[in-house]
Amino acid sequence: MTDDHDIQLSVVTAAYDEAANLPRLIQEIDAALKHIPGVHEIIIVDDGSDDATPDVCGQLLDQYPLLRVRRLAHRSGQTAAIDAGFRIARGTYVAMLDADLQNDPADVPRLLDMLITGPYDLVSGWRSRRQDPWIRRLSSRIANDIRNRLTHESIHDSACGLKVFRRACLAQIKLYTGMHRFLPTLFRMEGFRVVEVPVNHRPRIAGIAKYGIRNRAVRGLRDTLAVRWMHSRALRYEVEEERRSSHA
Image 1 (cartoon, rainbow, N blue to C red):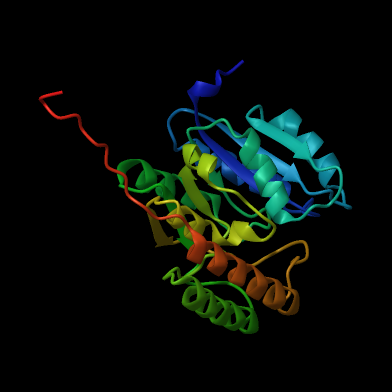
Image 2 (cartoon, rainbow, N blue to C red):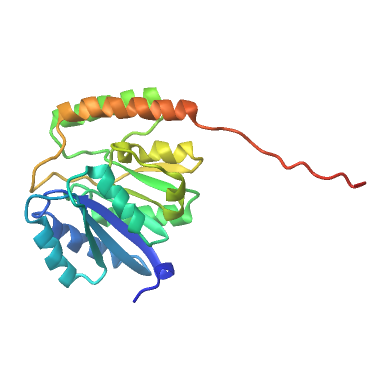
């Protein structure tokens, strides 16, 4: 048995109907972790999949000793699945990435090294060369511009699924539905240091995208307004301790 304090990195991914992608994903994560010293774990949270994802996860458990799998009782959404993974993560650091293989696990060691050696609490991926249809790229660019204006941010790609951060920071982060896309802003609101770096992005080769332009537009605007309200109502103050006089 591995002591929780010995785990360096927890890699968390939420999966919904990603049976075709999970074997390659776990293989690539496992290969990437071999370049990182220490003990690690991989966590898959199945968001109530309707395909063969549970069966595939069972097979992967037999192949990868560092793998842990949790399954939500019913589909609860990506944020809920990610949050469930965060709550059982034991690593000093946490990496998160999407299960659709568009995020490249090979980027994780580089982001983790930046986190450990630099003055950062979260390193967020930026899909500077997105491998998506042009209409999806355009809609995301517009959404990011609107999001930044409303939340007073300067994040190029808040919705990128690839991020690495210090697990201790999670004690101050409260997730609500859709809020996983705003982690850089939520971290900054709590005073944490955030940096954004370009990462590799790949086209989807299997499975079906879960978010379309229409369903993302309405939800995205609603969530942005919620974050704007949180930003405007955040507590900001400095405290100084009053010292006793030397004559007391």
